[in-house]
Length: 342
Ligand code: KG4
Ligand code: ZN
Image (cartoon, rainbow, N blue to C red; front, side):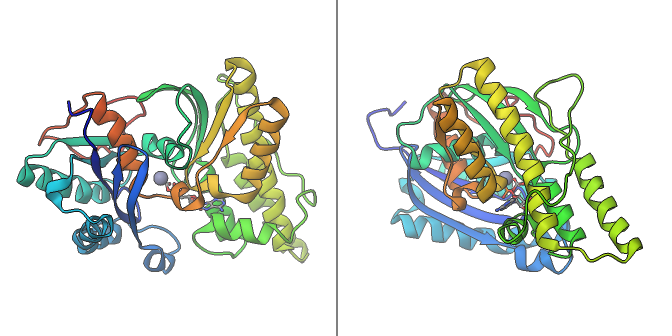
């Protein structure tokens, strides 16, 4: 393995509604990070339409990869290996990136590395924190996932807890739709909550029987919907900002509380957050306050590396590549791939 030579990974991501490509040098230096978002199209339908996502990925992927290479000042022949998200996600969307990566790897005879999307989110923390290395704890909160993870080593993940129903981001999106803020809900609730009172309404913080680190957000979502219906029936005005702030506080309280218990039990001295919801300002502030109180070093990626991007896939791909992981031409999209499985 070429350990004394620079390593350039081309990362490709197409698991949901972002078509993205990136070139990362030696696992930590982002040379380019191109993201073509489809949000404007899906906004018309109030959420991601899988067939449209696949079609848009197909239309854009070649151009996005070309741009990532050109911004990095490299050509395909300079690339060491190709890393691609192969799960979890929307099957048709994943297939576009996987087929593209396989075609490039085959044509250039370069190694191909299939990457788990959540592993990518976790690895986003390595980009701006050159000193961060495992072991550490990580809370991954995105539109599709809510995982509390022990990162034991590069590529070594133990899931301590996960959501039993809705993901945190999904709850943000559903509540945003119900209070008329539209899609995507997370950033809109974040913004509205800034001028609302987080103590105005007392929404439930769900406890889940069985695993003490598991989450449940569907009860909270129902409580918000019930509250809204109740107001409508009684003819009472709804203060959108207060609902947003109180809902957001309920989510953040649970995420911080679970993370704090994991820090105590597992003795993490470093703790990171990742995924789209990790760009939420209240979550960032709450986690930072808790970590400071516990004397734990807190890490979070810049918002651009929290939401879906290919730089995080290239970083995860680098560590997998260095560990000897190689995917064959039989690599397939795995919509329900579990973290730690191949
Ligand atoms: O990681 P991501 O881009 O895609 C998935 O892998 O799911 O996460 C997207 C999710 C969406 O549910 C979006 O509403 C949420 O992240 N999100 C936020 C914020 N920005 C994005 N949620 C709360 N506050 C935000 N500022
Ligand atoms: Zn994601």
